[in-house]
Image (cartoon, rainbow, N blue to C red; front, side):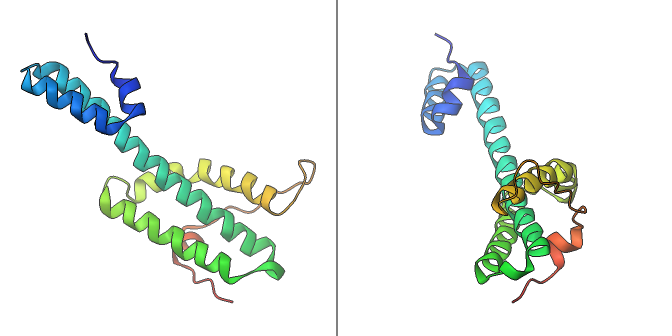
Length: 146
């Protein structure tokens, strides 16, 4: 019976690898390659989503820093530093998550960050919050200190 690779990959990477290993032992190379392709795609997408989540987290805190200066805290500074470090680690682990990838995710990440920052700043849906776009320098180069 042919494995449901999408379901298997979502359920367990370990089970996926074990199934691929068994297929290779049984010399069912074509089916094993399908499993490897699906596993690779899933893992690649997971890294992309992780970077995008860190980018949104970073942008949220920079927006709050910009629009709520009276509430700045060391916690915000730590979050900014940590998110930048996590993005660098993801880029080191997966070089395709480069500047071009970040730029391609920038607008959507900024929109998500704007909504999240609005909620964290306790603004209602009726409140107009249209922040000026963040720059690369603000997000990745500026230093945030108390």
